[in-house]
Length: 141
Image (cartoon, rainbow, N blue to C red; front, top):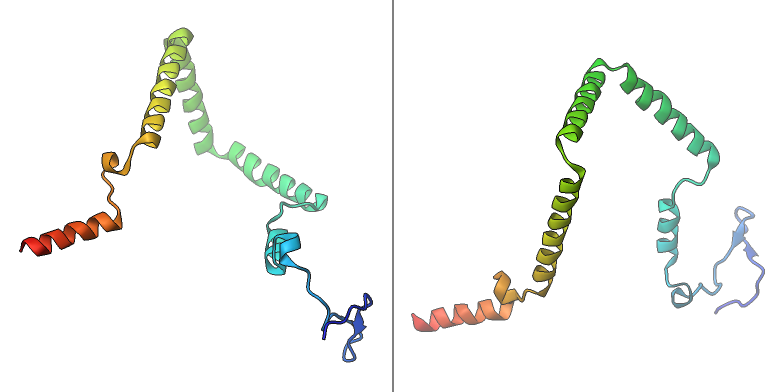
């Protein structure tokens, strides 16, 4: 029997509201089951400002200051900066823009061609085709 009384019953053992016998919320109305909604709630990003501040402080103190004091990272940063400066002196921005445009054009053409390719062109066969070939080989023996 389903109880239509909107007031929750009180569980005798703990004095807590008991929802036994009450109608469940329809998954068709919400689109998700209770378990799915609970899982989604766990996956939501941090909303507590205090936790966000602690995470930002931790990242600032540990990561940034730790890397700033690391000799190996300093050498890496200096070498990288030197390579970038050398590269910018050698490369003409107009030529770089042309090569990037041609690369992007080639990539888009390749992707478009691959999207239009049929399974025969790519080399894939369906299960039915594979089974038919196997039967034909067995019949030929």
